Amino acid sequence: MIISYTRDDGTTERVSTDDLSAIEAASIEEAMGDLPWRAVEDRLRGQDPTAMRAVLWAVRRRDTPGLAFAEFDVPGWRRRLSARIERSEIDEVLTNIMSEALGKGEDSSIDVMLPHLRKLAVDRADVDAALDALGKGHLVRARPDSGA
Image 1 (cartoon, helix red, strand yellow):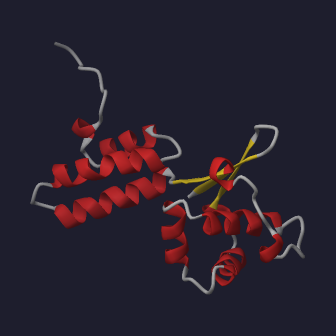
Image 2: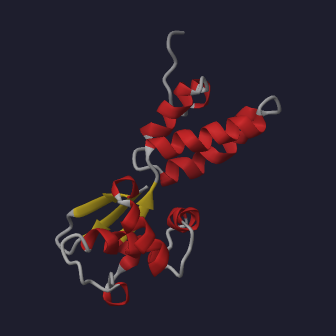
């Protein structure tokens, strides 16, 4: 998951949860009231401001070790913070959908999830690439016809 923070000058800092250490992830879980990591990830997908702030805080503590979570704020968080999923997470979601829906209308199950995946993806082209990798390239939208 990528957490993006837009600074006052308009530049964007991007932090991947894949780059967190186990200690940083545990600190985030603790700061969020001892939530398990899976619940933290669910909250990130839901654009929860506390979860996004916690990830940014954990990374900032690398340079400022004494930084307390209670004192770390992100004014204007609605316009400054966002969480987006990466290709590996898109692959995981689509693989899970395929496993669950195997043999019973899998295309419609995937089709229902695509708008949500595209909205959450850091790079929307990753959704199309993941569909191609699963052999479901025919579900890719806006693909130009190949010939006739």
